[in-house]
Image (cartoon, rainbow over all chains, first blue to last red; front, side, top):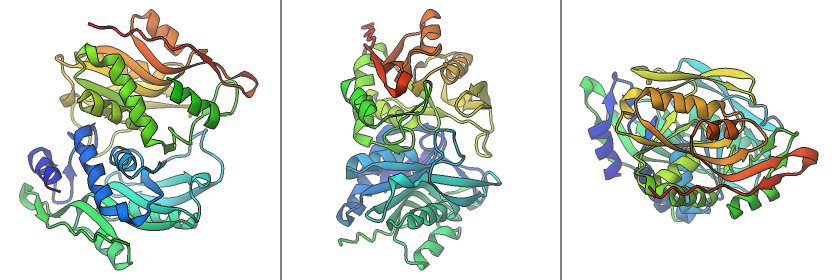
Length: 198
Length: 198
């Protein structure tokens, strides 16, 4: 997605060979116009697949997911990273290790919002080692729902997550694919657009 | 806002005289169409006020804020509840006690995204005791920016926050105002619409 790559090129900050900071438009400050364009692109890629629900994870997954939900006309469900007092019954949970924050989190979704009739699009801001995506897949599949695809804003293709998920047979659609962050430079791969017209 | 009150009436769950659970459209599952209507309503109320930025707090403030940002054509900045490894420089912080979660959080915003030229609309999902709103006000004012108004999706008018903030001179625009949750029933107050046409 050209607009997104341009934004990463001009505003992204390479902190190390592993870490790209996009706090000016996605992870801290959010560009609503860009989020809308991202929502439209996810619609273009998944509109033929009968999606009934988007599942994401707080916090940075919410903005692109809500725009995609508006475009695809489906509700968005976000997993919480800690249990709250008002979210206690019938939780589906998974354990997710964050390499960025060096901590293990339990992520949780209430089972009342997912069932075996759901065809789910999982959306997240980044895909690196795939920990969050795998946790979300685990939860969705526990509910009996089907994971139709995984929509990622920024894939760090030089880490393991995307390759592993594709090898396991999941359809991963990433709007920007980063080949390398070496020497402070962001390298891009062509995006894969599987456009399954089921 | 009629559509929102209707949604609260039909889907809200009164857990106690203090706690209203709206997990089906705002706090866990999100209704993107409702969020868009909420964004339009915030635009209607604040479009004359030269807003340059929306400031909110993760996670449930993000969806209504991004829609309002799209409508008002301004960026959205969300405060984080814990420091992350990629958000470390020049933090503006405030301490916020959550009565729902019984815990104290430090909320933080990077100072690079706010300055004295900014006219800020603060948006949040709930206003009860006003802890989150006061923390956000503290951060925004530390940056030198001006708090033009506070946009709230659901105000629990029987708690202290809204009254205190209005007494301090802040313009608080709440799209639904709940007078009471006694006996498992949601009571509504008429909404106050100050519509300052500056």
